[in-house]
Structures are given as C-alpha cells and as structure tokens.
Picture (tube, rainbow, N blue to C red):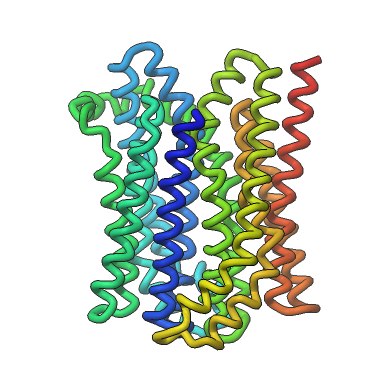
Length: 434
C-alpha cells in the first residue's frame, strides 16, 4: 500500500511540477491580458465537470465492479463495458444541453466584464465541453485498472497528458494564439484515455452491446447512479471554489482572473500531491474493512490517514510561502509578464493559505463517509456550504472587496464540509463500536 501510494504521489508530483511550469510558460506567452482571462473563464466549467467525473466515478463504480468480478471475470468485464457505453451516452447528451445554454451560464458568472468578453469566452468553451465523455471513459478505464491492483498506469497517463498539453501550447501558440490552449486541452484528455484503455478485455465490448437495453442493465445503471449522483452533487459543490474565485476575480481589474488562477493552482496543485496517492490506495482498503465490519481497525486507519494528510499539507504550504516567491520572480518575470505582475501575484498568497489546508485534507475526511454509504449526507453538507460561502463572499465583497470575498468564501466552503464529515464519521463509529 505504502509503495503504491508513494509511486502515485511521485508521479502526480512530477505532473504538478509540469503543470506549474506550464502555468509559468503560459503567463509569459500571453501575459495578464484579456485573452488569457477569457480562456481561464472558458475552461472553468469543462475543468470542473471533468474533475468531478474523475474524482467521484471511481468511488461509486469501483465497489460495484469488484462485486461483479468476485462472481466471475467474464461478468465483471461485460458489466464494465455495459456501464461504460450507457454512461457515455448520458454524458454526451449532457454536453449538448450545456452547450446550448452556455452563454447565459457564462454571462451570470462573468457578465461584469462585458458582453464581448462573455461572447469570446463562450466561443472558447464550446470546443472543450465535449471532452466530458472522453474523461468519463478514461476514468472508468482507470477504475478497472485499480480493481486489478494496477495503480501506476493511470498516473502515467496523467503524466503523458500533461507533457503533451504543454508541448502543444508551446508549438502552436505562435500560430494559433490562445486557441492553442483549447487544442491542447482536448488532445491531452483523449490521449490519456487511449493509454488507460484495458485492451486485453476489448473483446467483451461486442458481447456487452446486445445487453444494453436489458432489464438487468437498466437496474445496474440505476444502482450506480443512485450512489454516484449524490457524489456528483457533493463534488460539484466542493468544486464551486473554482467558480467562486473566478467569478469574484472578474469584478476586479483586467488580469486578476489570471493572478488568482495562478495562486489557486499553485496552492491547490501542490497540496494535492501529498494526499492524492494516499487517497487512491487507501480507499479500497477502507472498503474492505467496512465490508468486514472491522470498525476498530477502520478507526485507526482513518485517523492515521487524516493526521498524515494534515501534516503533509501544512508542510507543503510552508514551503510554498517561504520558497516559491523567489522562484516566481526568477521564472515568471519575462515576456509579457512583468516584474510588477509578479509582485502583485505574490501579494495574493495570504488570501489562499487557510483554504489550501482544506483542499489538502477534505477528501480524506469524505472517503470514510462514502465507504459507509452515507453519500447523501455529504451532498446536503456541501450544498449548504455553497449557499453559506456565496452569501458570505457577497457580504464581504460589499465591505472589503473582491480578494477578501474570495478568501472568506473559500474558507467557509471548504471547512463546512470537513467539519460535517468528521461529525458524521464519529457518530457512525460510536454506533458500531458501542
């Protein structure tokens, strides 16, 4: 477990490093200008939706897949392809609906920047929203690999996608400008799918097609959606931090969407390195303990995971605060990104410190609730957190401005869910251990 978690964390660490370098290169190529503001705004919804799929589908699908595999590999493989095709169709239809209503959605979030800004943002987003289906299939392929205790290949795919993304931007930006980032986003997701696809069981694809409209398939899809939809809603609520940051940044002068996005990626990306590997490897073991009703051991494992996650998160935040300003001045200054831009960027760090702690540990607090099948409680918690955070941000904005509003909203959004999940877990333990 520790070896696999370590390898995944190292791979994700390299990926995060590449992404940070990519952010630096993009900032120098395009500067804190309106075009990059528009792309960051356009990528908000596609990124949130693909990350929600990647972050929740494994938790809902993996337990059901493992149950099928325990009966027989054939049944597990056919089940895998049936669900893959059915969910892909649903997600594709969802993409069409979002595309039709994209302009009013974007206008509600970024309308403060003017109609021309929203129109350009909408043009960029139209191409990226259809990557959701590819992201879903790639996530399901990763879940299949996890079910076979193959943890490294999905991380390698993520690494290859990040390298490809950056390479395309560098090569195409002189010719296609900001559109090179759209092309890179789409191609990277598709390539990750082809790396993770389980080709060895590809023959079961045709066997699954005649069974798609059977009653069993409908029941299986319903069972999956019953567990997954609450996670989607809960995760969308948690990903609301992205929307909150960019929406309130749009009320600030030109370039602040770029500034806040860079700081958000810096803190969020780096604190995620230290806990993602632990989350991926820990969850299947936690499921086994819960199914065996060994809550004494589950309590110990969860406590260790949380303490480990908190310690590593605080450590990486301190490293960011003390070391990154030097490297940002060294690496970011140049091209269309001036020294003044860098100083302004660094001045935003204090607003993101406390939210970053929540980003690093939230999933470790949520996974025990998912393991005991109480996802609906997480959904209610996080919906409440969204309402509280937006209301608080609006009040703070009226009094102290956009940056204070972003910080206050993020703190309330993140820690409402964490505290609620911890209370739920302790209540469940008390019930079983007594």
